[in-house]
Length: 290
Image 1 (cartoon, rainbow, N blue to C red):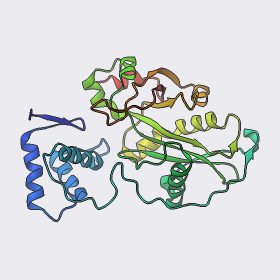
Image 2 (cartoon, rainbow, N blue to C red):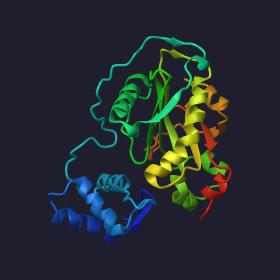
Image 3 (cartoon, rainbow, N blue to C red):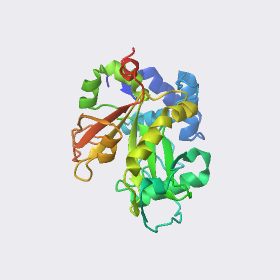
Image 4 (cartoon, rainbow, N blue to C red):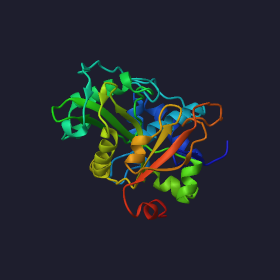
């Protein structure tokens, strides 16, 4: 074993891992969440808003266990890759086929404001998005789209940016150390769904614009940091990315056909176009700042 280990953007010494083992040995009643909170406090591992990086620490612990360096207590709730139970929510599926002006004002609503909104979001993504629902890990924002009569038209999810993408990082001129420091200033539009029975020209690009105008502010209110740029990946075997282009997103390259966790380069997933949308004029300066 070569020390220090670099996991979740953090360097761990052998003493750090020994500290984790000591806590596991001395506190056998602690669950994973309690352990990660304690380590965040001991290691002063916090977000800019002062909140501990609990989810990042739990992922770090999981990776230590994968390397056979520790043995964690059993999970008490679904973790990454394990779907939670998602309630079925009744949804009006009668066709909507009209001009955008006929359903204005269209609203983009943060689901954090209402538990029922979040249930609706989870159900819609699981049922109608081709990628399904994967429990978001780390920082994320969920939005529902409503028409003027409070009818749900679709939803959007923003989450963690991809850790490393060759074409994106070259386009930014992003050295590895700077990327690791500033990756939190990026987020990824991981899901965008207009429901199958909704046929309203220009709705998708209109909604994208409305959501992006509030995204950084919402992110700052929840997590204490702003977002400088948003990225997304478009599977060209399914979509042309027309709504993103109409909303002034820019194509900067393509992925390599690998998944997020494909360290051994064994995945075979579709190559996707990489599109980005800066939220600030000085986005490049912020992302390249040491």
